[in-house]
Image (cartoon, rainbow, N blue to C red):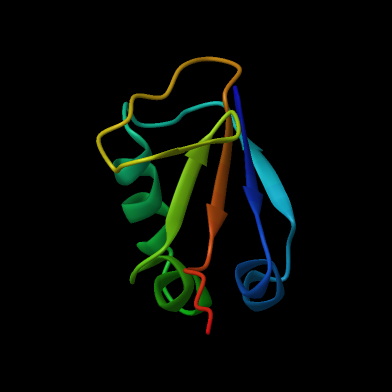
Length: 80
């Protein structure tokens, strides 16, 4: 099982702070694509550019997932 957390705008758009998933793909990029494939707000929130982390470390889409991981999706940060 992995724990998925959604932060900031993603949390608001999806209406949830997170979920747990027993059956999950092998990489975080595949996970994001599977979640986006739910359609609607999920597709809008996760179908574009999002930052991804596993166990509080920023990772790229090819990062592998393993049992017990905590996954986080965050919107891109802009600053000035």
